[in-house]
Length: 162
Length: 145
Image (cartoon, rainbow over all chains, first blue to last red; front, side):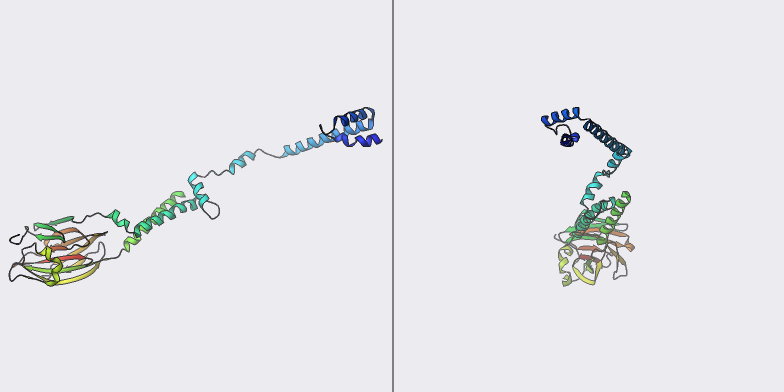
């Protein structure tokens, strides 16, 4: 009986856990002890039942939608929206906020250009000295001077001696 | 949704850009009516000293200022000026850009129409009536006098 108590813990040992001497002793005891062989058979049966039960439990879970769920969590929005969204400091990124992120600096740039007066340069249509005259009843003559144009009706009139 | 946002942003930008233009400061303009005469002793109104170089190019020997008006002109808004003989004259600021300004002068009674662009430091001298008895009226337009 004291032999049985000695080898009882070894019945549930896994492969490699026992030294060769212990394994040899256990096998010799099992060859001679019917009770320990019965106990070993019972342990093996129980271990097999637990494994099967765990397998069955795992099989009951439905993993059919697992891959779809993982893919669904991947951000599929356009790259620009996704990138700008990351820059947005408040809350979750959204297309509205992303486009607002574009519009705000553009508006700021336009305002800056207008306030600096650059807009008038781009919109300048006339150049200094540009003159356009028309008359149904008179000949029009334009004299250009450094101080500005002189428009008279009729032919150019020069002071005598000039 | 995105198209609506882009359209809204473009609209906002155009409105925003147009606001300062609409609120652009008016251009101060001095409009003078002057009379040139061929006959009589040569004389030059001292008020017309800044126009001497331009007026000396003409064969009139006597120059007098007969009227002056100061206006703050906005682009596209015409100013009506009454000439001494009752003839109406319309002066319109067509464009005021950086360093240049464009005016339009119309004498409807004479069916004349001029558009002249000058730099900021120049002046326009323009005949506006026919010569009668050796004298004629001119108008001068001086921005930022």
